[in-house]
Length: 403
Image (cartoon, rainbow, N blue to C red; front, side, top):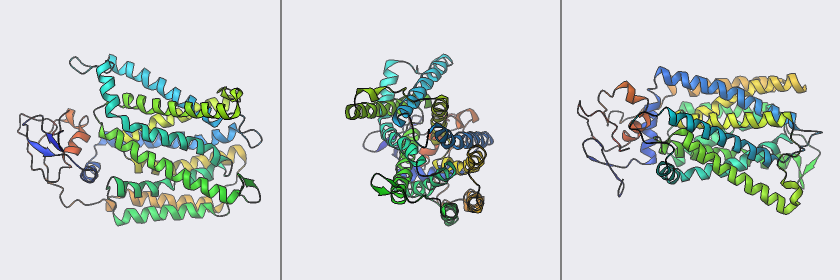
């Protein structure tokens, strides 16, 4: 790409580089034409996400002793990132062994350096996730697990707003109404859920909890939007190589936090294994699996789908919290969940789909099936060029954008 111009690898035609707005519109069209294989992948992602996200606050609650943590939350986050780095390395080794002849080697120095340069933007969500992972523990000091899960659903609206203004993603009126219903459902569940009478950090618990809630909702929402953009903007890069960079940055940020805490509290606090139990080990594994699954959501699915799937986990969290810790499932919780599911159905209803006035500006002719799944986002990005009238001959069936 030079001066905002990209050149077709087939016919050498020159096209304007797609903007975030046009890419977003092309994604809207691409999303409405997903294959049955993609739908199966989405279902598997949602089911896995529901289980892992639902377990996370329960495991955090089990890790507390007398209402406090005997370990440093930052150490858990660091060990989680290290676990994900190890997983990414193992998967890269497996993937490199199954490469076809002629493909660019994944483990070469040149490939690694070039991918590192192209994916430097992943440092932004890595830093934001490091902050958010610490906030998850803080929130557990104020709310029970089911309430923390419901509060996290507020991220859906914040993400929608960020997608609207940053990536120019479009939503229909019905979808905005669905998000409003989601907020109503969360509000119904939140009635009388904030404890009062104690204090934290010099503030009343209610005030401190709401401040943490604001940060808890905004930071990961921004991280999710940046993460989706960074992963999809380098779609041809192996997801495991991208994960290696993302988790590597995360491990570095959390290690720096551990060093900072050790400088303040003394060398004794540098022991990252202090205070850990079987519950914390399970928590580390669950958090690692959750982070890995999220990367597949952001690259191959959608941020909104990821956050909406987390609302389904609320049922699992609420039931598990009631069964294990005796928390009551109030009528507010049941009504809130009902409204959330109505919102979810409405948002993904075919009637809520955004109609594109310029749906046929770019036409790709008879792309073979074996290229469609691999190059779906490349084709989608090519279709984002609103001024293009590019056509490919029958014998030159390749993606519009150069690799």
